[in-house]
Image (cartoon, rainbow, N blue to C red; front, side, top):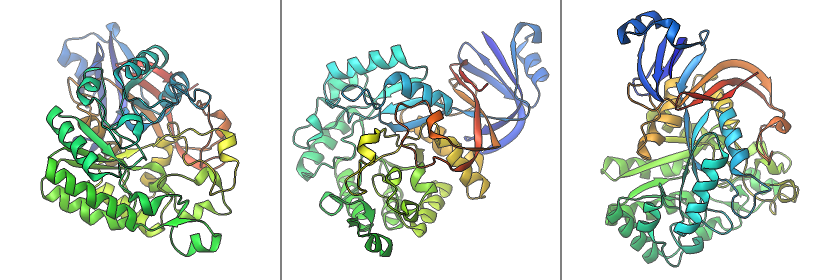
Length: 433
């Protein structure tokens, strides 16, 4: 099957450009791009009558989002999110690949559980699902998992998620073994003692609200330890979220020293700050907690410069019962598969990040880190695409989301940017009515 996307505003994160043009797809792969659909067909020796033509009407066509760190609550908490509901939410949000977390019940720490997850994901969802596995058994930080066997079973990375491995010797052994297998380790850089029980970032706001808080230095301390171990072991490492200005110099030095390290940040830490918690609004309780406005601006600049590589949703479904509690007792996390793109458009419309910069961080860089052919508009790349209008205004109603849990901090917020269609391997998996 051959499809021509004509009259599109092509967002190319690899070249850093956005131009009106056309893109040709055949058998799930991109054949090429050009300034004009007719010329592109002529170059390939194709007749317009023999191909499916999608008139993009000047809207944006970009590589599909590759989202690292999505929580799907199978097995164990299917009432919060299933692979079916998460896949529908992803497709509606322009996410074509989800790298899913192992913080399920039980944890994904054996090849048998991983195989169950892969079967469920492939049977239920319309988008690509790449499962990650736990780094230690039960995510308890005591004994590392069978990394080699789990890689053979399809694990794309290893992480204990927000359970920081406290025992440095255990973590160093796991990194050493991961290095020998070529495995990617994803860690949550926080000093666990300081961050335990924290519901806010320390400062005047947390003090006035009487909330248990953690210093931004906890992130710096956790990252410093991890960087030392990466230098010692030579492992491939990704920090799931860097959210404070204090951690950025250490990350910059590690990259300058040639360590194999990348870093991500969630869309919530890029678009919200500690004051959004207001009068104890639990839908704004995330982990790590929302930071100061100075930290938010510093992290946006780090994404613009490329110091922070990846923007992710950090999609974490929580049911009403776990959120409708006193702030410090409420569960952390927010859904974001469908709100990732419109929230990112806030940064575009404010002039802080261009569309190529955003898709470099949401598509190209995460695809590269996971070794995927997606995330680009070049010939031979997987035809995972999102067609969207960055300017359409709307007010978000959380009850219209496809996720089973609707714990979004953007409920009732004025937003801009809507996904019009999502394509996986050239096939439409979502079209907006």
